[in-house]
Length: 187
Image 1 (cartoon, rainbow, N blue to C red):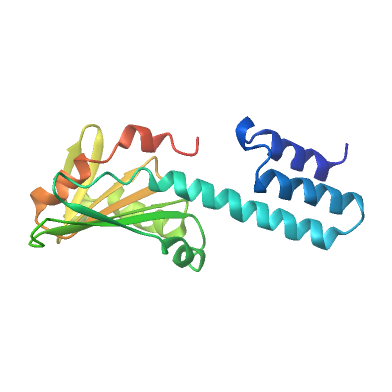
Image 2 (cartoon, helix red, strand yellow):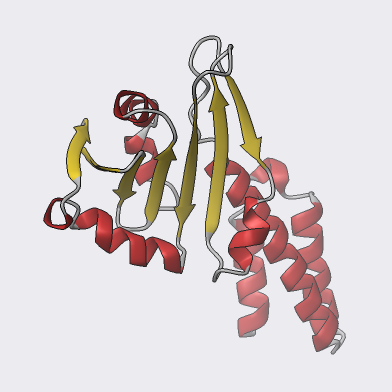
């Protein structure tokens, strides 16, 4: 079996069994058929389409790590963040805004993974104390606080930023994040 077919078959087999007959597996099968027919251009188009769909599933799974709104608050999940990340080198992102019932308080949580910005901001978070930022902990997770912003770096690849509100509200928001589960995302 040639390399292309091995890759496509492996990709199709790693999908959950219940999803085998979905749009992604159909597209991968179409890519194999196009390749076997000698239509490399269409095979590549189908692989690109399947990759986009798989990335959308991965992004959807990443958004599940945004914590629910505190009791009585509302949460508005940003749905267009991924398009902006594509222009910044790719990766994944999830963002939501949280508002108190009376509108007097709010904060936003932004999570980015596997992006060039994470690498550059990660160095700042990792050296927060040396840069004069206050450092707190949520469980075993270090959180840097500076000028109305709290930042955490998970596994050197996921940057979480909470903005808005006072320090107590920022830390409360950070406490709502499941860092243990997030650290295993994509592994």
